[in-house]
Image 1 (cartoon, rainbow, N blue to C red):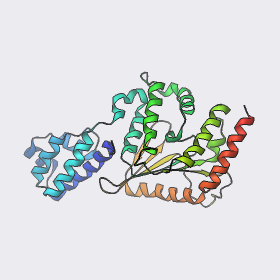
Image 2 (spheres, rainbow, N blue to C red):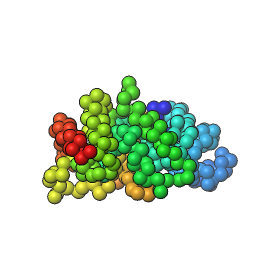
Image 3 (cartoon, rainbow, N blue to C red):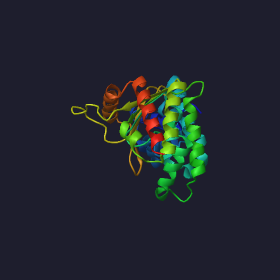
Image 4 (cartoon, helix red, strand yellow):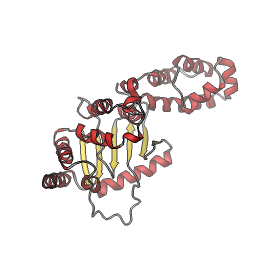
Length: 290
């Protein structure tokens, strides 16, 4: 699947709301003419429920949407109603990872900043397993570490596929030095980061050094991911990592703040070549801690 059902649902919500307002319809009038419950129309326009393409077609016909626009909206409706591989076991892999897989599926480019841990798209199985075990008390009863690792491997395929998704990550040096796993596991993880940088053309790994001069910077206070989409239309979405959930930002002003943070991080991080040298040095240090 090379599209995100969730992102298509967001786009569809805005498109239906715009079409209704352009036609001068209230939700009550639209409900009366289509036979669709007013609450269901509200759910469509706020993107907080699964989509029924048949209902979307009734709405578009009632609003008299032009043929070309009608076709584009119905295409988004069909995609919004689709289910990706992550839906088969989202409880077992964790709902946050399922949501992330959905967002990654249709992205044309991804930028990520991680101040605390190795990003999931670049985690080795050993690192991922160690962190999953560390967080087991926050998981649901149905969570399965095996399913979590399987899902992470499926997600990582977007970086090595023929049409690989361009992925740039800035990792704080603190995240690379902090002992969140054993020295052996961290050594393997650092070697994996080096290998991904050298062998995966879509991947760019850069390190934000401890001595970066950030006194006059806005500074990111938490990990975040910035997703760009070319279809449908040009969309940008930001997710902000918290201990409870991932905040999803779509508001243009809020996304713009994180666009500025992304630019700052790109300016302040080491170059890809210098980052490789630091990763190699840190991997060597791990060997001395065994």
